[in-house]
Amino acid sequence: MAEINLLDCLPATTRDPKARAAAKTPEDRAVAKRFDRDFFDGERRHGYGGYRYDGRWLPVARRFVEHYGLGPNARILDVGAAKGFLMYDFLQVLPAATVRGIDVSAYARDHAHGGLAPLIDIGSADKLPYPDKSFDLVLSINSIHNLPLPGCKQALREIERVSRAHKFVTVDAWRTEEEHQRLLDWILTAETYMSVDDWHRLFAEVGYTGDCWWFIP
Ligand SMILES: C[S@@+](CC[C@H](N)C(=O)[O-])C[C@H]1O[C@@H](n2cnc3c(N)ncnc32)[C@H](O)[C@@H]1O
Image (cartoon, rainbow, N blue to C red):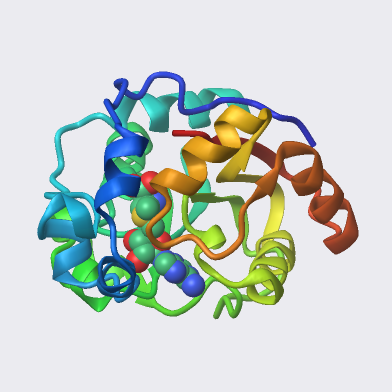
């Protein structure tokens, strides 16, 4: 497995963790964790503050395809697919690919970009409804850390199980105490977050052999 930032072509996002820490309430967190309209398209204090397609995932899709050498008929699964933006962009790069997504949010699926709702299943990362080794690439960006630790571990096992080749996850993490504090200040929905070293220990414990990167606000 490798630590690799395959998201390095995303535009930089300005975040103010201190301001969020000062403002967020337990109620804000509870609202965000419903992953419904409030989280995606409601106020910023409840999540994205407007989750709209703007093409930013297209270079990311290209990067994945090149890095993993995915062929035209590749099978790709996005766990925590939300409104399917990255799925849509995979299909721009590989129009003959089989692209599937899964997410707990019916709101996100019902508002999927580009008519992709039929390709998005409603379900949880810790119980993937797909056969063993059925995808060439399984990826999950900023999603499995929303499960409590036992579910997060199971999600990693599931990602490992349904992939026959490549796996990639991005999770909330820190390398320094300053980054740890910024993450605590920023977090709205995550249940499982830890240092980079502890994530590596967890990956080994559950037998996750894929690649990883970190969300550090
Ligand atoms: C921060 S968003 C990330 C969305 C997308 N991957 C991206 O990077 O833009 C987290 C996503 O995980 C989904 N999610 C939360 N818990 C989940 C679970 N247990 N299984 C699958 N998806 C989940 C949410 O509905 C939401 O779409």
